[in-house]
Length: 321
Length: 313
Image (tube, rainbow over all chains, first blue to last red; front, side):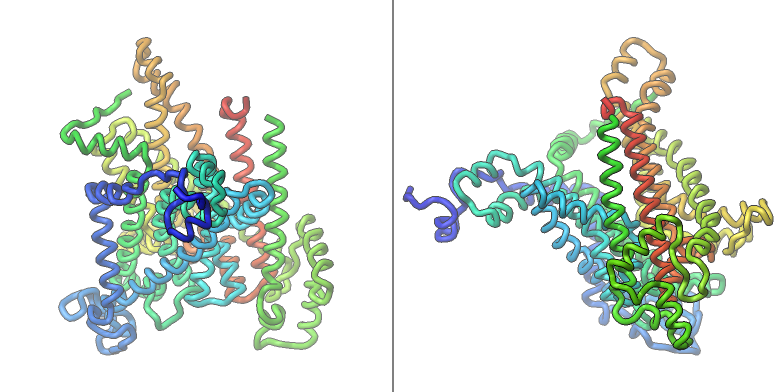
């Protein structure tokens, strides 16, 4: 081994720092395999895949445009021609549900992406450096956390103005402290591990240490949190659009459609029922994947799961009082 | 014990200070002149000047903050840009509706969650457990406002059992009050109940697996006594915490449900103030919600340290 060990050598050769042995990364594949063996997770992943396909090919799938008004066809019940019926302006509800998928996924992805990046950076710094950095950053997060989520989102929109972009920012801000807390506690668990201390002792830079050793090993709870937050973000977008602060008309959004259908609920149940079912299905899918990931990524749960899967047929007996 | 309590209170005070800065900043972060925005087309120089002066917007920022905080502490939250009424009065008017909805909802939630969660924990993988799992999974995935619309569709529209919307004050007509409360309370209660069911189930399961329960069984205590004295007591302790947090959430999280049921509560007030750009009202409502949230969390934390001997030791 040459004399050049440490960060400089790492950059030159691209090799991981010596001494610091990171736990094997075989986990991801095993985790995915385990995830696919659970019927709930499989169902949820199929639903998610379906929604993504619908959102990508929305214009090919939707029978009509999102705002094609046909007054003669207004308030038609579901049937051939209009499988989900038509709304008060004669627009095809199926088309609007299909086209609304993109909005929901986009808002979810952007908003959660925002809180994931901001929250993870804050949590990493707070957990890794501790002391006053931790105190200052986490007290700021506590302040944001002190506001009920939906109200904070409303307040942010009150400042920025209504609209889909501002709704994304509002939801993103709301969930940032959650990610900061999750990341911080995960980092605290990793920080004192032997491989991190060893890397530090051979002079690995903080940035590299965080990126190569701390973050990957603190990742499982962050991944679970991301999935669960996607569910919340979809719900939050629907709620904001429902009260008129999110997606603006005539753009299709499931929450917006519910608000529009509400006035006709007794005449035409289908306007409010189908977008609502779409929201439930997508949110349910995110929640189920989150649950599945939590089971699979938690080492304790995972060994129990693997053991249970290895011995099918054996059922736990109920405990009765 | 007192040390922990004191630290928690101090922490809450620091956070509250931060909250006050954020709420104060709300008005000042708005691009443009908030008073001009609020007045809109009804603009009139004299009213404008009067409102600006009343809101203290012509003072330096720090002075404004100090004035705002010192009056907020005494319960004066300024006046509405729209109606000129004191914000505190507007909030107090809305409080009974929100409080009745929040308490009724938590009652519905607990009535569902405790029996269902306990039954499903006692018989894992049984039919009850299946029902409870499906209920809690779907419950947390359903938007509350959609649930509300569906309940209106069935129970107000098709069956006609309850009014579709509106609030009746208890003093005017107690029966009408109860009838108007059912659908909104069931809406939020079902959603909160799904969270609590899940929690009760895992809490009871954990208590069942505890060593002292095994010991109690081993020494031959009747199953009923083991359950009553060793399982339920320990399982319900964490439930107190979660119920408290849910309560705080309900007080503020029912904004959209209040809209669906035309419920004249605080959430509706907050939302209307955003739409009307009535910033003092929004500030007041947001501050109150955050305060309630903080206080409930603090009380729950303190209660928990008091109830759980392992923490208070």
